[in-house]
Length: 386
Image 1 (cartoon, helix red, strand yellow):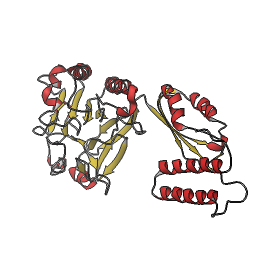
Image 2 (cartoon, rainbow, N blue to C red; image 1 turned 135 degrees about the vertical axis):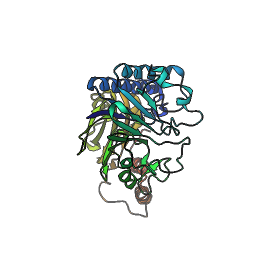
Image 3 (cartoon, rainbow, N blue to C red; image 1 turned 120 degrees about the vertical axis):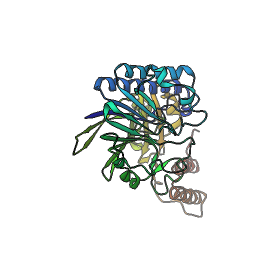
Image 4 (cartoon, one colour; image 1 turned 90 degrees about the vertical axis):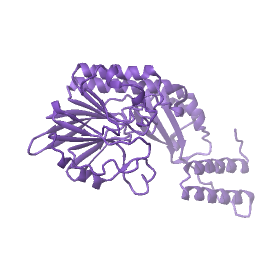
């Protein structure tokens, strides 16, 4: 039996431009998630930690950041847990590679052993004899792969070990979606590899599948790199068992702190903007990314500014986004004739809303609905505060 922990896309050192002042805090969350991975590996007494690319967000990192990572790898070395790292597309093994600039194995105290291995184009696999495992991780010295890394890989023809594990940073081919990705593989190639397990990185959401007799999985990012990655936050605990009949079991384990919530609120039930602020404030959580959508029919007298709501509550959440998808209330009484200013205005703006919706421009449609609401109020003699 072999037990391994599979992670990927840690993206240490990411800039997080979308988080503004919270970028530093999120970088620390990512490092804390890496520490939690090491803690879990030691607590579970796994045999092997696999990192399927993009451990670092780029090849340009200060030495102190690399030393922090090496200190965690050293904990694994001291626990006799092996680590195999594959370069990704952010920390690729080119001339400027961080793995050329720093010898992680030496920094972790693993010189002369197989306790820490970084795969590279000249060393695409490693035979871990003590575990009876070969880890296959073909990679390239360029960001865009010249071919599939699975090309020509057939573990059935390799008799060095009982277990054959793949470790790749690549996108699974999806027509019209992954054509522009730098490294792409197919399920047919996975099946033809005859690997016992394929540990993948690149997709930041946890995903599992099977091709032929090979089970494959994306561990996902242990902490989100972008605020919409709501299937991030996990690592995978994988158990390989059997001799004649092999079995592979995969268990998700949570290591990230960030949580996500999507909330739909009926605009017709919101009394005022202060009421909405008070409601959302009751859900405050510094680890929460809250995505709020206002839906339903919005009364004309309800005056809301989503940006003001976000600004007022910004320090209560990791990230708060408020989007108004509600629609204005229909005109009361007789609809104004098309020949009148009000009727022509309503007809024209409603046509623009329909065009925006047909083009999937939800933000544009929402703005036009607000134009319609305010215009109706102004043209019927109501006072409007802008």
